[in-house]
Image (tube, rainbow, N blue to C red; front, side):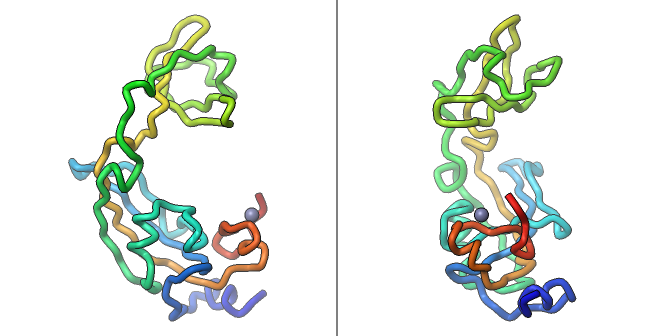
Length: 177
Ligand code: ZN
């Protein structure tokens, strides 16, 4: 095991700051305009990404650049910096057979995946018929102004595989995918 990994697993604190090609682990809590929690990622199961490759929102990458382990960041992103605006033409009727592993009893509000020509897409079911469902293809966070409260948990050097793939392979770099 490489030294940088050992220090992480043994609870050591790296003094690296976040820059291009480093693998960053962070925990976060996201709230919307009303202060309601919309998403979180715990210290035990942090978000891990390779910095500088647009694997997370560009505005978040900018906020994280130059930070180091233990630093806390709070940044508020308008829809155009986050998940965009809602599109009215995002509502579509699709055959139920195009859903990927649909639940037995589909209900409005459920999240589902649809096979499209461009690959799998996350949607929200808004109406259920006998053979078709109406789905909202907008990102669930579209149109929201979001506040990200982030704590940097770890910064390490990438493995050669991670550099080649241009994404992180988990906290320690050996996750398979
Ligand atoms: Zn990979």
